[in-house]
Length: 185
Length: 426
Image (tube, rainbow over the protein chains, first blue to last red):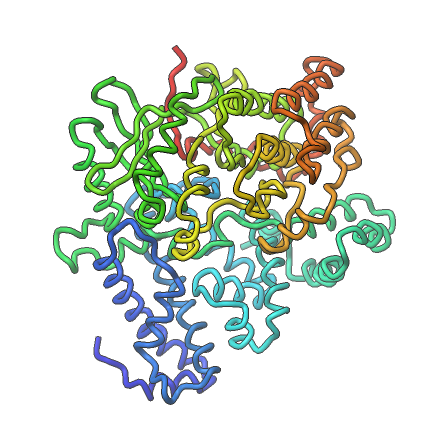
C-alpha cells in the first residue's frame, strides 16, 4: 500500500462525512497490521502486545504531528479502535471457519487464562454482544470499542465522543454490566 | 429476526434500557449504604423489579475478566495469525505462540515431551506435557520473560523449591523446577478440573456445603504450610483448583491450593523492578489490610484473611470489598466493615457468618490465631445443620434465575484451569 499523504489523513479526519471514515479505515487497518507484524518479528515472543502501543504507533506513522490538533488525535485513535476490532474479528471468523462447521461453544472467561483455543470464539462472542449493545445504546457500545479495542484512556474517549471523562467512566461500568448480561444470556 | 426471538435473546430492549438507565445512574450516584432505601422507594413494592435493579447496580461494580483488559493482549494468538507467511517459514499460522512452543520443546527435550499450550496468564504460560522419566502427564508453567528477568531466576527457583517440602492432599505439589535455555519453569501434576475462579464465574454463588468444604480444605492446606513457616500470600480463586473427584465427576470437589512460593518470590524479590516493568501482581480484593499497606512481613493471619474473602465470595457472589478501581478497593479495605452475610443469604448459619466476619477483622490480632481455628469455627457450625443441607435446592435461593439458566445450559467449562488436566484417581 502506498503511503498516504499525512495532510490527506488529517483532512479526512477533520471532515465529518461518513465516507471519510470508510475511506480511512482500510488505511489505518493496513498500518495496524504492518505495525503488529513488525512487533511480532522483533519481540522475544514471550512478551505481550499492547493495544495502546500499536494504536499510538499507527497514529505517529500516519498523521503529521506538527499539524495535528488534540481533537484530530482523539478522532484518529477512535478510528484505529474500530480498525482494531475489525482486524481481530476477521481473524477470528477465519479461524472459526477453518475449525468446524459451526456449533458455537460457550467459553468460560477465566481471569488469568484465556485458552489459546478459545480466543477466536470469545472474541466473536464479544464482537456480537457489542453489536447487540449498539442496538440498545449506541454510545455505550462506542465507549467499549474505544476502550477495549483501541486502548484509549477515558480522557481520549471523552474527547472523541464530546462528553466528559466522568460520563465515560459511568458509561463504562454500565456498558460492562450490559455486555455481561448479553454474553450470559 | 422475529420480535419474539429478539425478546428471548436480548435481555434488554432499547426501551427497557431507557427506562432502567436513569434509575441505575441515580443508584450509582448514591453511597452504597443509601442504595437499599432508594431501591425500596423506586420499586414501590415490586419485589422482583427491586431485586433486578439491585442486581444490575451491583453488576456495574464488578470487573470483567476479559473486558477490563486489553484486546490485543487477550487475543494475542489472533493477532499473531495476522499476515502469516510474510516472514517466511518461521511464521506458521500460530505465529509467536508456535515459536514459544518450539523453544520450550527444545529447552526441555529429553526430560519432558511438551504437547501444547493450554493457556497464558499475567505471569506464565502453561503447557501440557508428558514427564518422560516418570511416565506421567504434567502441567508446566513457564514464567514470562519480563517477570523472570525482574525476579531473577535463581531467587525465584529458590523460593518455589521450598514448596517441594509441602506434602498435603490439598496442596498442589511441585514436581520439578528449573531454568533451561533462559526459560524459567516449574512442573506440577495435571489436575482434571477447573479453578475456583472459573466456577464462580459460572455460578457466582456456591451451595453452602461446597463453599464450606472448599474453605476448610484450603484452611487445612494453609495450616500445614504455616506450621512449617510458609505463608502463601496470594490466596484467591485463581489459585484454588477444584479437581474432579471420582470418574464420573459426581464425587464432589477436591480443592487444592496452587502456586505456593510464587507470591513469596515476587514479594521478596525485585518488587521495585516489577513496578518498573509494569507487571501487576495480586488483586486487592483478596488482600489483607496489612498486605495492601505493603507490609513486608506478613503472618499467617494474612492468609486466613484472604481465605475468608474467598469464602465470602463463594457465599455472597462477590468479595467483601469491590470498587471500580484498585485504589477504591484499597480505601474500602482500610476503612469499611464488610456487610453481614445473613441479611442477604439467610441460609448461612450464624456461626459461619460470625467466623467469616472475625477472620475479616482489620487488626490481625482480632482474627483467628490459625487457619485450623478458622476451620474449626466453620465446621462446628456445619454440624448444627443436617448433613445434607447443602444439597437441598433451597440452598440455591441466593442464586439468581439467570445464573441457574447458565448453569444448566453451559455444560462446557472443562479444563480452563491453569494447571488443568488429569490427575487420575487410581
